[in-house]
Image (tube, rainbow, N blue to C red; front, side):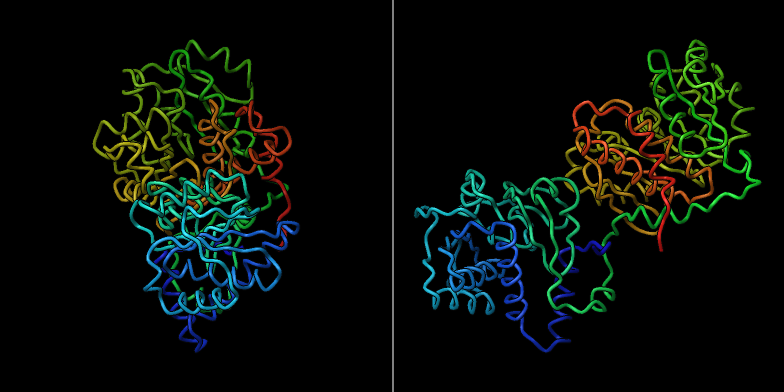
Length: 492
């Protein structure tokens, strides 16, 4: 699968360039799309021979018209529910409508009954920018209330292809067959839930046309990133693997920095020091004697430890009381690589943005909202805008966690196509901070460490969820799997 993710505007530019180079009209691409849809229907539901197509009044509806014509010729029992004004169809869609009429496919209104065993959503394509309303919203409701499998054409109707936001209402598909290139909104926010299984059909668009078009983001390719971790020489020693210093663990939250510390050790950091409340030192050393653990109460207590750090992590269990506030102030004056997570982000939101030369921020949507002084709903409405705004505001590598986690850095946007709802449990973010810090301390760039760490974290969770289920997945469960992934041989 291509790693490039495109906006709807970029896809339209690619399509027009392909049409110009191939000297063929968009109807030829529509024919290819309809053929691919029919092939998928045969492969996915071979015993189901009754098809109901919901066709809108644009080229997405044209794909549906042509699919219906092809299916009728193959012996399917087919009907089309026409939504919207079809008296002014685009030229290619008009030709498709004529093909369906010539094949004697019945054209129905929204409320005319037709018993089918597969539904096809060809209502709205990639150009949607306003909430669904009227008959379109009613058609979406009708589709979603059916017990039949649903195949979405290109994009589930009602889903914004650029942001992944549901605009009013959206089709919940079992399978989505997307065309030409992957649309960025299908991979984050509401996109994955609405798409179901996502497949891509490039049609006859030449590869060089795709390559020539700038993309909006790239999917994180973990196996490629792993190659940037060089094999260790036989005379390698722990001083060459970096020293991660973790600050956190106010009263009642000692487990958070411990999770980060265990993750950093398991991901190859040579040395790990935890700076926490003095009351927690004995318990943390008993749990993980490979760590160095020190009690700190004031800013001056930090100096000897921060000077030795390769990477500093602040935030896991830090709290938002005076203890955490004053210690974080000292961290923000360091000329060191710093990763801020959890309560460090909440404290950061209350002050002027620091100008650290090497900074990673790892907010979830709520923390991102506080940093941007907006609501979490606004963040989720356009996650791409939010993560880019944070990158600009803090001049940092920013990981916006969530469904389709996003990374913004100097090299652009990256998107993580991994992870599952089982990760919605305590300590997952603390673990991730330790993973990223360890990779950063071993010499990877901030962006590479963030991307690879996120991929290891989410992929490990996916492997465990596939074996044991999502419910009951704990943060520390991931570490054995993360270590296995980290040490897997990379081919090529």
